[in-house]
Image 1 (cartoon, rainbow, N blue to C red):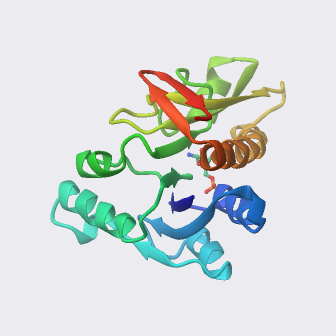
Image 2: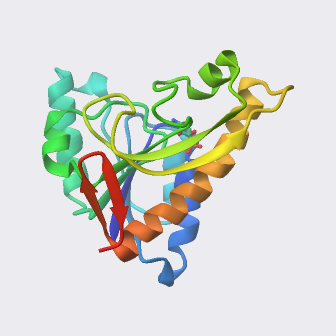
Length: 200
Ligand code: GRF
């Protein structure tokens, strides 16, 4: 399967995918990496791996819709079977979803439906939950609302800070992402309403 991975930041999830794809039995390869900003470690990781990159910055377009269409075209040029949002901090729009809906996954650092949005680790810590985690889901038009493909649980420790908790989540998140994307690539998957089934 051909993957296009979209990133906005450090790209440690991307790196885990790049490392997994180095093994030909994994069943997927990263065809390209895109970002909504330049000069980020995620793009540098792709370049070091010899993977083509592209950037679509919102302020370079006259409207959010134009940006969404441009992003869609840039992704489409690499003909992905699956699009992976790995720390991509923008909501994709309707053009993107028309083209890639049902085959775009995102990872969220909380156990959905708890704590959607930009601050999953902080919100879980402030709420006082003792278990949080990460969720891989099929992207829809909501914020972290899509059908759940996989989840992994992580304990909250008494002395956690937002940073220490997010680091623990990210370690589990990377393993979940690599394992699940590999299975999606090798075995296929079906989205039936809110339920996602791995395997043909
Ligand atoms: C991940 O925890 C992702 O779920 C969140 O931002 C983090 C991205 O990390 N939205 P990285 O860029 O993959 O290192």
